[in-house]
Image (cartoon, rainbow, N blue to C red):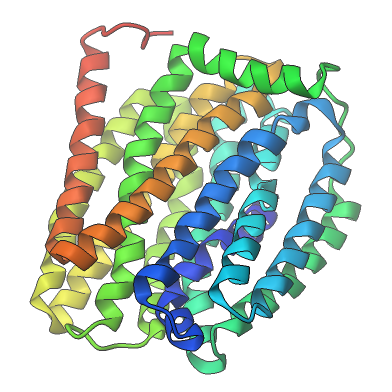
Length: 384
């Protein structure tokens, strides 16, 4: 399941590393090519809201197989796209369909005892974050040597193989509800209104994941720009360093089981704040700048990864019969935050430079810290 989470979610993220190659290959500006990242992430948010609730209503194994097959076909269409318009459409479909990790996570949470839920969530989260980070290595290295279309075509083949494998490997599941589809969607909105702990997890995720997306979208422009003048392969290597953080996810799950989600969230917020200072050293250029970028990206990777483990452990403990719908509300808002973060990161970099991106990361972390401290003082609706 962890491997499937990583392979599936990578389809949303490898385009971030090849944005400059897409711009050059299709003869468009970098701003226009960077829209692909935002469109794919927004598609992911839409897919989570519309499709993940079906995990409570339908048998999950055939649902996952169908979604992966659609993703593989959309990736193939993107790899063959003749212009930026069809590529954006295909990217949006990829985002909508590749929501399999958000169906697998609540499925796994329902297969284990409550005292192991944090650790198991952490294991799948390790695969998820590993896919997010290694996707940039995959896209950057393959795109540098074989062109921007190659990552899409290879990903289409891998996703097709994954669809076939999961069709045989996943356990059978019994639907937890028989509600009609419109009722499932309405329930997701009701949960957002009536579950304060869900809203608390969402706020932490939106702020930190938005900062993460802003940094990773803009760093491709920085490293391939005049300050460093490197290829997209360098972006992939930076992502490879950051991918080491995925090994902390199982440990983060055990920390949540032992210390509680709020304490782990606080550690992650402070890490994100420190990462902004390290990322700022990227302005110096040269080897020192690259080292600072690597350290800052590693810290924000750890912050987002471990924070997500805490957030999902918190929400999966709320209502066992509605885990897919709880995850729907949480992840939909999270990826809207990621899409906004990508957009803001691109605008901040193109208009004000890398320093503005670092400031954006710091502001997001401070907003999360403020919410955490307010909740600790007994703010409304945060103590479930």
